[in-house]
Amino acid sequence: MTEQILFGDRLFLPVLMAPYRLRENDPQHRKLWIYVLDPAGIGLKKPTQCVDVLYEPLGEKGIRGALFEVEHAPLPNYLLKHLDWPDRLIQEFENKPLHLDEPRLAMSGGIEPCTGTPLFAGQMAYAVCQRVYESFADALGRYPTWGPWAAHRIRNGEAPTLRIQPFALEEANAYYDADSGTLKFGVFETVPDGSSNLLPCGVVMTTLSHDIIAHEVTHALLDGMRAHFRVNTHPDVPAFHEGFADLVALFQHFRYPSLVEQAIEDHGGLNSDMLLELGREFGEALSGVEGRSLRHAIQQTVLPSQHPINKPLSYTEAPINQPHKRAGILVSAIFSAYLQIYERRAKELLRLANFATHGEQQRALPSELISLLANEVTVIAEEFLKVCIRAIDYCPPLDVHFGDYLRAIITADRMLNKEDGSGMREALIREFRRRNVDLGKVRDLSEYSLEWNSPSPVDRPQIPGLAWSQLRFDNDGITAQSITEVERQAGALDDFLRLQLEQDSHLLSELGLTRINGDFGPITIESLRPVARRARNDRLLHGMVAEISQICSTPDGPVWGGSTLVLTEEGSIEFAIYKRVDNEERLSAQRKNLRLSAGNPHFSFKHGHDSHDQ
Image (tube, rainbow, N blue to C red; front, top):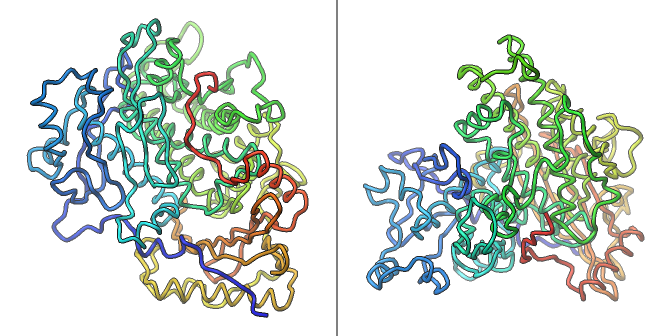
């Protein structure tokens, strides 16, 4: 019997979709105005900035790029009643989409920020989405792709662009629709008696929140990286999605030097609500409590020099059915580690400047010192953001727990940077331990124990045809391959897997797979991605990341297992990070979740941002 091995929907997406490739006379970037923080932030000296996004022609019919498309549709009545526009302005809006390639707008950074200009909402959403996408591409060493909806669109002759609907909902919500490939943003009224920062019964557009845009597009990017990440196998799974999206949104703040400098100047350090809160305007509008954010990154987080009042929320005590609150454990652990590294570096600068940070000698920071501290903030944030994103390539293909993610971070960083010069990995391990996060079957808390095990430490199996030197394209990790080359690479992995099945190799269990028979169905090669990554010392590391899965039929519905294969430049399996499809404990847990979800294995991002779940 010939073993059945399939090619997944996402396998060929890197060939079929990619960012715009610059032509000879194109500019490198275009300037666009955005709000760097929510527009209702009273007291913010610089609420707006004109930022760089990678250039691409957008056309006359609105914002239609290679990756993102802003829907231009008639304004809904619930928004028109707040704008109080005459018919003339309404018709002008409907008939004149935003033309950012028009010379005047191209030279001036598009429309200047204004909460009363609906066209600006699309401009801002596009700019923030592009910048988050750039962060992912830089960290991964390749261009990310979208989820399976992109493959379906291509088959139907449609563009595989992520659609942005700035005014899709009349509710306090925004979400990524994983079925249609759409970011949907809501419009809602503030509470009548609430924060003094907001107009009672005023209008809030979620698409004007930098944090919310970054959070939602991160959901879309994460959905594109793994075929089965949305399979709801454990309370950590939806919480991980929310926490990861929060982390990306928060670290985006540190890309704006003037914002960082203002936070340091106003607060004498980095532990500032301005930089470490998500969706302040959204949170205040929902709750009516001044200063209450949607989710807080420094939940019970303190600097090493501060005395903690309470212990951080323990993993064992975290709510099971409140993903946002559970995600706070992940976010606060990583941000606590971030703040520790910042304070460690800042202390040396403060010592050299003979500047006291506590006590009676504290005084205003000089501008030169603020600039130096802000630079440290930015550099450290970039390191953390890169490793948080890069770690996804070192996660199992599904059923990701918080402990798995820490191990993925440690492994990803150790592969590029053998020495933990900044102490980042040590700080992360300490903070996860403080919160009693379950780390699985590890011997101790050393980096060596937490790093994923390779399938065969003595003799790593090699996959013929997948060595970097054998790739038949401009293998810089960015240049698009051909369909033929992807088929050749997938065929090489197919041959390797068939050999293991025929020989009933011991490697099968270490790949998370089993023989195809009975309830255990076909194996699918979901993705196969060449990567080219640069270490902190500028060393370039080449390799490939593959994702394979296997389905198992149960009376309650389908369940999956499989592995992420991290290949060396020579085509050897460096790591096989797996969740076994035939593990009885996992099968039992997944079947229980299927029963609770009426047979639907995937969770949805379409949920309200309940102010109590913060």
